[in-house]
Length: 77
Image 1 (cartoon, rainbow, N blue to C red):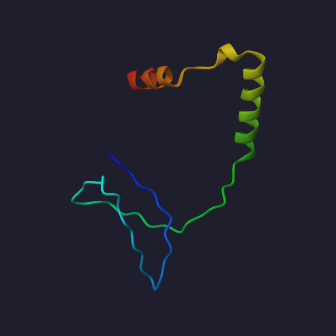
Image 2 (spheres, rainbow, N blue to C red):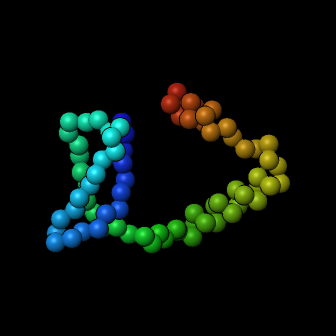
């Protein structure tokens, strides 16, 4: 599945979306919601990332390989 995300301007309650030439589909789903450029990251998540970063710098060998983790998730561990 190919997904395209665009932020487009609304003019007179209408939008115009131009798809790339490589996008081949006879039918698409469209989800429209107001664009929000501001993101609020919860403090618990900031704290968690900081803690993990400190632990990583203490011992970089604890880092996990992304592809291996994804395979484990797919295998249902």
